[in-house]
Image 1 (cartoon, rainbow, N blue to C red):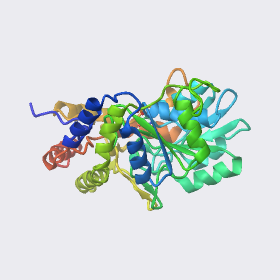
Image 2 (cartoon, protein in one colour; image 1 turned 45 degrees about the horizontal axis):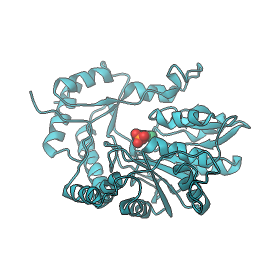
Image 3 (tube, rainbow, N blue to C red; image 1 turned 135 degrees about the vertical axis):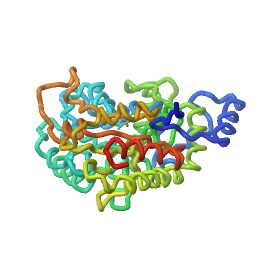
Length: 368
Ligand SMILES: *Cc1c(COP(=O)(O)O)cnc(C)c1O
């Protein structure tokens, strides 16, 4: 049996070992210690956003952002249905209602035209998700948000380094949220961050992250907060990863270019999109299998699994999950979800791995 090619594997180097060791030796293993603000500053600076507030994970970053903006019971929040489930769960945590939006069939992210149809008097916010590393159409989304007085919380868990019209994803909305889970573009093990250009929101994010404690008066709590603080150990890994983030993003794009070259002449699959206004970072390289091809996505996944190549189906649209299902149909997202597959996309992939994957796909399609 050939060695397993995983869907994504983090690259951790000597610098990570050195800085984590330094954090351990210093005794600062919880959420005080120099690496936390250093990681916040470096990541915020990279994204060209003023403030960084590091959190335990990406889900807590999103929840913190919603609470900071005052979202709660009686409110509605617009979320794309084709995303990882936590983009929607965080809305439920606040007591607000999730209203699901269809995908743009061309670039797979939240469809601005469908956003317009889902707005009611109770709508308070939109959570655009830059899916699989491709940016949302932020000009259209911000125009709708301004017109209806809505907050925008960008879910950038999959889009570190991605650009919309040459500006970083995450720099358009009120607050943007990142994940540093092990398969994300940079990792801290578990970890997340909120970024914002607004001084008042940054202060509020920090207070809510730390049990709602008054920064000027110890153990005086004026609001119900959370413990969503990142540890110094996580941040030490993050600081080391920041030295490599630009290389990781470029490697993701190189891997996508190698795949595209091999698949571009195959009529029965669509390559991942990159709109003229976008820099896609291809967090997960994805293909769509056409409906008129005799076999389907699941059969391709089986075939690759037999060759010890790990793949993933697209996310299952959240509006079809039992506890969210209200009988709505979102046809574009449902169609993409049935046909989409993620191929191995980690920065540790070798040229030989990519050759093995592309020949397996080509032979399944009948293009050897
Ligand atoms: C990974 C991910 C999250 C959640 O991040 P965690 O760090 O795993 O909590 C949220 N949204 C999207 C789109 C993700 O891909």
